[in-house]
Image 1 (spheres, rainbow, N blue to C red):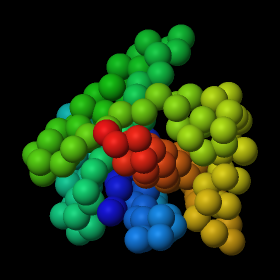
Image 2 (cartoon, rainbow, N blue to C red):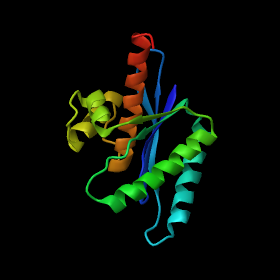
Image 3 (tube, rainbow, N blue to C red):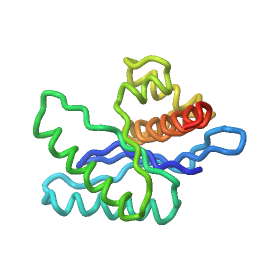
Image 4 (cartoon, rainbow, N blue to C red):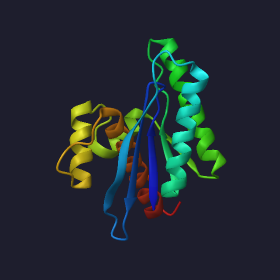
Length: 164
């Protein structure tokens, strides 16, 4: 099963494609970021994100898309733009008839590090260890997206074990 993990943002949207073999071992297929230029009108930035996510879906044929839920901090304008990026990601997945799973940041941290308040460095190191990589995926947004994909694989494994 291939999972496309997404860490949405309007300037940088991270993505990670992770697969799981029959033995339950996770393997990284590709990760990276979709970048849009500051100063570009928001509709064009959102179009770029939508097109690039759609291209990843067509190229890799994931079984599911896992997206980080919006964390509403103090910066309302940032939350709104991230929400717009999430929207076009969800649209691209829905247009491809893919199941969409959403995870809170604390759920991703709990699934990978066993601690819902793990810091960014701990999370990046767990991604590296769980995938048997020599280096931590870069940039940070890509590593975050890979973590979301791994979280989904772990969640699906748990659902299978308990018979859901």
